[in-house]
Length: 428
Ligand code: NAD
Image (tube, rainbow, N blue to C red):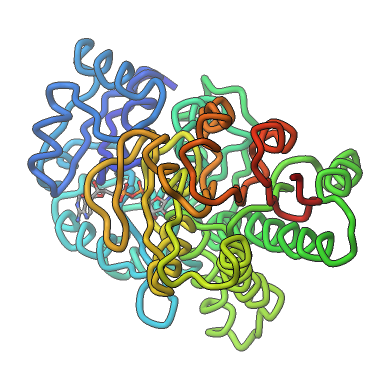
């Protein structure tokens, strides 16, 4: 296909990446947001989020004139051939997806969309949303297409441009193919299907990943109790091509802006059609239990009681490579530590400013000063390279609780400290 005229509504992780990448593929893209200050920054090439390559793509799009930023959707969609909805769909009452932002956009643009223009959901939306949008639009000349996005924060641009697959679903197959063709320059397999199936692919995939993580966290706990080593267990499992090696690392529980809300939303969707998705509910429960176990492990490392204990935290972002704190397990764990009376000092290379229940510092060694224990909560590579002998000198206690199994246990032990990982024998 040649160049298409596209409007992208919402300029967050998904919208900005979609807009900048579609412009780089030759399309003419107008990005919209309700946040006027953000639009003003983007219009001069300033990107707030930490995403390798994104600022460059935005600058290139601005300078070629293929990318522009505006406030308000009505003008942006007036001559569009496709409108991508990339607005938030957070967890709403009872765990179901809150579709108010999607509905607000549809309400805003319904009467100005040109005939034949496709409305495309890139936001993660529950099965039935395409139909709901059609009902809200009240027009038969606007195809609604589901095109879920699978990019990961921290690698958003490269994931968008090198996807494992493109999923497009619509009841109007011509519209679905038109959307699939927007990506023809990307060499990825595409699944062109009906709207309900495309909407479900995203939830089914994300929930599978969440279950995989809950599973490996539970196996790590079993390793601790049985005297096995999760590193060997997952290595042995991962060679099995039916299982694969990814998403097999234990951690402080899964989080971020997607997995928690998407797992709850799918449980709700299942309930709405009379199906008790107990397998998924158990994965959510296991994730809560994991955080409790992590806090208990930290308490054990400081002699059993957290009240008054000084805990130095390394890592706050929900994963390395991003400054996103939304639903970060690190924040849940630090909140629980603070609630038990611990004094928390935290450092994250991508996070600054004030956060409740802790003192955030801008130097990793400051968290170690007089700490009774150090806790690694995000897998930033730079934590491996810290001067652990120096840390041992300035700490008060001697325990390093590594909830990501990130550090080299021998290096920690050689520094005179005690390394406590997940599902692995302690060192020191
Ligand atoms: P985000 O919070 O980073 O960005 C959303 C943007 O939409 C914000 O800039 C906000 O100001 C804007 N917005 C809100 N209401 C608006 C409106 N009425 N009109 C115009 N703009 C509006 O969100 P995100 O992380 O990009 O997620 C967006 C959607 O994509 C969600 O459904 C999410 O589940 C899905 N998703 C996210 C990821 C991810 O890794 N973040 C990956 C795949 C899918």
